[in-house]
Amino acid sequence: MSGDIRKSSEEGRQSSVCTMSPEEINVTIAKACGWTEIYHKCDPQGPIDSWVGKPKDYCHGPKRRIPDFCNDLNAMHEAEKVIRQDHPVWVSYCNQLCERWIDPCDAIHATASERAETFLRCLGLWKEGV
Image 1: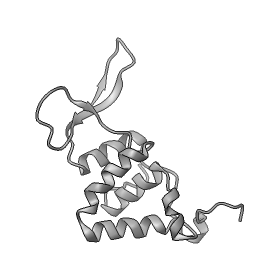
Image 2: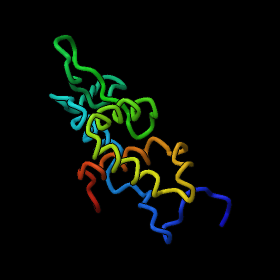
Image 3: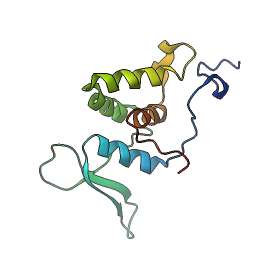
């Protein structure tokens, strides 16, 4: 072993190769967290190219950019709060995240993308071969 604390694919680790695009992952997690009216905003006059929508419990004002769950641990922390409310789902998420590691205590080192994939797998929203 080359010093990596993650399990190799031969040891049953879930694929770290994304079969969903980062945009698809971000939109799917946003929807799971209660975001609505999500759409792709592209401004041909400028650099704005993003996904926007309304967060849960958002009343009025301009739509906001959805979080970058694939790259932002803070965004994934907020998503994790959503599934913490459902104990069986939370336990499943923690178990699946820990299965990626030789020592389950090392799961605290999981990247945002690893957490995002595990989040979607846990909810049955992960798409293979997209």
